[in-house]
Length: 325
Image (tube, rainbow, N blue to C red; front, side, top):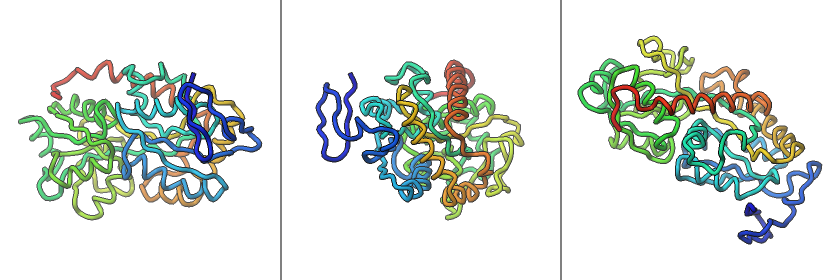
């Protein structure tokens, strides 16, 4: 039996069914309590930044929302929290590839992706190789040379997460050695690079642009086929002879047995916010085609299922190549 934790004047009784307005909330009356958006990563990273860009529009539509941070075990702590909250439609998981890897590694309370229902996709955020502007390699060739002499010390959000798996896929093609240090989230990862704690990081475009604008970091490559318009002078991994695509796909999901009418209401709210002017401006500012980014529940669920199978395949090949952790 799941433990349901509700906000406000409600009781939290472990082992007993939750009671209160959200538990009995009909689709017509929804939302009956604040909606929690659960993040597996720390504040200030790409997951958090994305939420903050659409949250005001959702609140303007009449919903009360709050962000809840549950870090640990890749995405395991966030999954455990989501499972404890039940299926009343008032808890949403902010989901990335890290969640898929956590499930595929059997480190989640969820047996497979079928235990989650996608609600909406926000963005596919490309990954950029960053080094310190003052002390890092001058260019991509310099990074490759350094990595063939000794392991490159990489900052990642979580071991087994999006950046970690992406770095190892890239390293297999580039023929370099890597060593990963986890920092909990993109914001902390960027701070570690600036402090000289790591040699390089793989950051989302949303995380990279602020430090690039300040001149504290240097972008060596974008890990996708085409250059984003905001980094038009930075070569892609495909141009450099190492054809690998790494991106963080950010979207939102609920427990699969959440009633369909509640999922539909939640999807309606999120799509209204994600397609609003603030979030669309944010996407364009990243150099992304905003028209192709936001997806509804049906298409997002299909992508989740496909991405989960890809994650399982990627994990099965993680030990290949000249890498060291």
